[in-house]
Image (cartoon, rainbow over all chains, first blue to last red; front, side):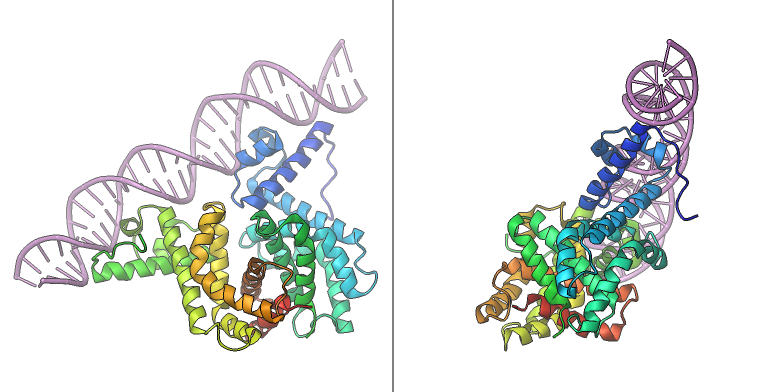
Length: 193
Length: 193
DNA sequence: AGTAAGTCGGACAGTACAGTCCGAGTTGAA
DNA sequence: TTCAACTCGGACTGTACTGTCCGACTTACT
């Protein structure tokens, strides 16, 4: 089963599903234990409506995870990760994905423990297939460190993007200063020597 | 009130308090929502015993936070952060604190939202007073980037240390390879140009 | 316009947890 | 050795949540 069967749904139901997933992503990014009631409130919907589309909290988490991965993958693809020099390409990709990457990091933290490492890895795939070649290209060229696995670089980029988000949320750095700071920090972190 | 009054307690009570705080630190680092029952189990104690020393869950969290900060501060001080070149000193300090720093990062995530930014900052103090001068020394000398606030550097170091811990926990990097990888990543991240 | 799909609002049972209490037993201090 | 401090085990209350159900109403399709 490559993808789930394309159910025929009414238009308002479709809209609500989108609202719910987005509301859940927002809510969970700021509070990993956000309740179904809180998510429903944010989505402008009644709690029972969520259960109309997602039989259980777990299944909603799954959908949110999938959506977050898809968003990162989409933004990554649009930034053309395979064009130009690796460093330049990484900067371009990060510029257009780092906030989403931060949300993804938060989601990941929630799903660690709930899902097996294998399962988590599997769901990563859409992002992995775009990021990994970029990192490898940089390693081959010698601009990114070769003494650590690709997964290390990915983890560091995620962590830095998330920390950057947290810094601006806490007001310790301004909106206008984060992006350059985050970019140079991430680039430096991967750079060899 | 600089410190709480030094209550006269029986020796076994004192031991239990230590066990409870340590058990809570472990438990909460791996699961931020660990229950009082789970913490009691790990501490080899009955749930009611925890309430004998900590009136509420919140107060236990406070104590755990304080302990984590103290542990980091202690390990930092022992590594003599003010001796030698900034880069060399940072490496030395990180080498002896990064695991504790990772625990601290996890605790911080729990306490964000529960406590105000001001309050959080206040509790940081013991660590800050040791780390900040080191970073500033590096900035003055020009080896650490000057275009970001000191707090940025601290956030990045914490994030990298925590991510490194997560990577070894997930088995994507071996115990023997983490430390050098983490050190060079952190050092690079702070380095100017 | 008619009908099926979907939403609302609220009630309900089940579960997991924080926090309280107490009586019986154990341990440390003088 | 004696007594107070402490722990244990378990029972109990209150609360917050997840998941289910249903009847009244609204919305989208044809």
